[in-house]
Image (tube, rainbow, N blue to C red):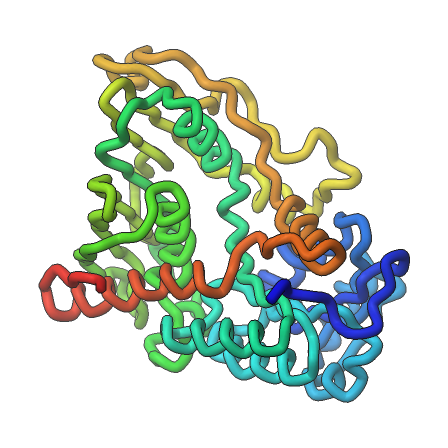
Length: 367
């Protein structure tokens, strides 16, 4: 069944979006991208925090507020889409309630704590003919878009090994639920940054058959994993080595991809998150998502890019706005969701296997 918008949506009126949560995810990523998308309007923000309400009003003067999600379900006929950007432990219950109210849903990653829960949500959405999509924005990072184009053009030949790093140097824990050791919070880097690097690997190279992981809590006072390595064997034979860390005193390349013809090495992070945190916006700060030439990756063979080997490859502009443009197309035209709950469930299969592997010291086979 093709996912649809909420009942009562017309083809001309903007789709009215309710955003649950206005912390980092809601204020930095979701609200600006919703506002930048033609055909979407940020109608309501759910937060009881007065400081966050004032922050939202400063950028979106016409936005309405709700203190709790139940207020959205009570007036579901006035809305067309719910975006869930609240803490991870609330994602499943809120998504279920939104679907029950007849509303399409976008959920920030991870959609759930387990693959089984993600598949249950996907089934509920399918039964109701409603869109359910997961916000995996790193599919629209500049380096990822560039690598996908290189692979599509066959520039690397047959890929043998994919290395992906999302590393930071944060020797002091920041606290909060993301670094909580309580399993109910679904915190730690495995489920945070790990959701991104695993999703990217599966998107590029298909399903994994084996998973090995090492996961450590290294910083004094930290409670959740802050230094994790995941090794995947894909069904097509590609091996992915994925690193997520808050304790990397020297950062490695974001991507190092080795093929039978050439390799591609790229340093540095996509610039969009930093731009959004600084208050820059896609509609007013153009060109959006571009980086300087000195940060371009290099394609070649035989010599390290650090000593001049390879040829610079222009980095494609990052394009986070494309996610919500695809959401709008899904709701308006019946196009496929940009990221499906079943794709997110496949990534959660890997994350659950990685957690088991790290705990037991074994390689886990996926079936």
